[in-house]
Figure 1 (cartoon, rainbow, N blue to C red):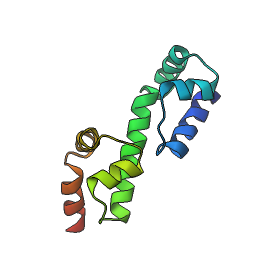
Figure 2: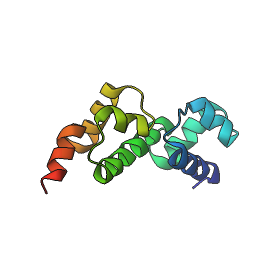
Figure 3: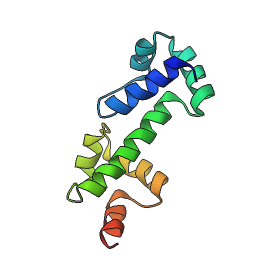
Amino acid sequence: MDYRIGEIMRFIETNYFRPISIKDLAREAKLSMSRLCFLFKTEAGVTPMQYLKQVRIREAEQLLMQDKSLCVKELAAKVGIKDRSHFARDFKQAFGVAPGQYKRKKSSH
């Protein structure tokens, strides 16, 4: 794997809760935005922003398992997603159920 892509992945994994743009990632990698997108997609199979979304949703699931008292708005904010409806849609797409349903489902097990 291209070392720059690995560095960007690590950057995303440690900064997912902050606002991150493709421009920020390109600056971090010292690449143009288009070159970063091309290399990232080639190496990781997804775009940098899709990877960021995956990391945020994965972290949201972990937070939800650790603290079931979090509401959807708090959960979204903790992983860097401002729009609650986008967060709920992305979470449902990843896990098949909305965050609240996921929380209730896991609480009952």
